[in-house]
Image 1 (tube, rainbow, N blue to C red):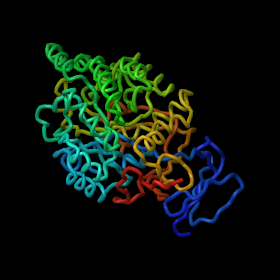
Image 2 (image 1 turned 90 degrees about the vertical axis):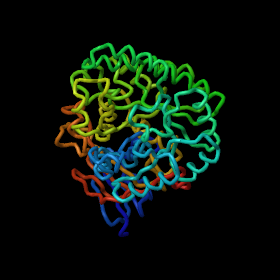
Image 3 (image 1 turned 45 degrees about the vertical axis):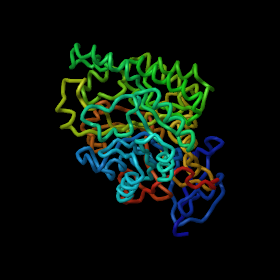
Image 4 (image 1 turned 180 degrees about the vertical axis):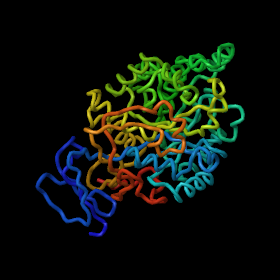
Amino acid sequence: MTDSVIISGGTVLSPDGPVAGSVLVKHGQIAALLSPGETAEAARQIDASGLMVLPGAIDIHCHIRAPAYPQRGTVASETAACAKGGITTVFEMPITDPCCNAPDRVALRRDHFSQSAHIDFGLYAAPVELTEAAFDALAASGIVALKIFTTPAPVGREHEFAGLAWPHAADQLRVLQLAARIGLPVVVHAEHAGLLAQAESAAALLDPADAATHNAARPPLAEALAVAQLLTMNITAGAKLHIAHVTSADTVEVLRRFAGSSDFSAETCPHYLTYTADDVARAGVCAKINPPIRQAADRAALWDALSDGTIGHVTTDHAAFSAAEKAAHEGNFLTAPPGHPGTEVLLPTLLDAVALGRLTIGQAMRLVSGAAAQRFALPGKGKLAPGADADIVLVDMADETHVTEGGLLTAARSVARLSHGARFRGAVVHTLLAGQTVWNGSLTGAQGLGRFITPHHQETAG
């Protein structure tokens, strides 16, 4: 009884859809979904009257990078921002210094996160050696997936990208083949290295202060061609291929044409769904993100792709930089560091789409929770069902999320200029991790509460 709670009076997103009722939690897991009128004893009660009761979001693409870059935030600050945004599990990308590319470095990252994470976390690794033994060792370290780029390492950031940058098709094919052997997904930042080199050379002659120059340097065709090449290779390789941060109508069309050809999935991000290149021009280099935010037609194509299932995941690509790091490149979209905070607007972006009728609540939560749990083999996550982790978010669809610099918890709040002033219909009001409140209008969860999550976490969960 001391470790039990009942969440009553809300509309619960059950596996069969939204229903009126209550959720009974015991020992960190969902014990039962109760119909109206059913009662159960519990040590605590949370009144969810007028609220939606949803599974916690799973952010499968996030860059925290602590402790190498403390000016960009800490594990505590960035996972606190996740909790505020309704994210209860976050996957950390391997780009830090040094790169997370070996079992001992996975262990270092795991131990560092365990000390102060407010929510559960999984880790990616980069495959620095393309051998069966190296891939077996990474799989045994407990990573959720592998990550690579199809582009060279940025100059000056080689330590961060050791094992990530594989610009040659033969190496990419080898990664896919080895990933297929161990059964882990491989997530790819896909831009064609040759086309990028050509485009960047031409863009060097343009005005670097013009936001359009960044799009010229990283054109949609480079993304679409790299994705087509990967999907072609995967027909033979048979990996669980996942395409990161899709930005363009061209790439959506490629994904549609390859539908059913192999085991692949794709994601996009709130900034691509909300903003256009015009907004980037307004916000300046703080809004520089790789790949770039595109045009209104691309944004519309991404929404269509979510609606018809061509893209099955929405994730943040949260990448915090300090104000000083961005300011040092003010007026130069070619040299400014790429990235923007996003954890506190992921779920509000999807709730807004529900309020507008673009998505149902079931579709929205599959995009930010259920599909991630399925794709990355986390059967205890992503659903409200008996036996699942009691990672739960209460949202008020009659309220709104008003994003202000002062209201953000991320350490990169000052550079979140794309989001400053944004308003989304729907608001996160309460976040629970394993049945414990971590956000309820203020941060309440203790540092270190989050657990290291590995594939097949709670495989026997209901």
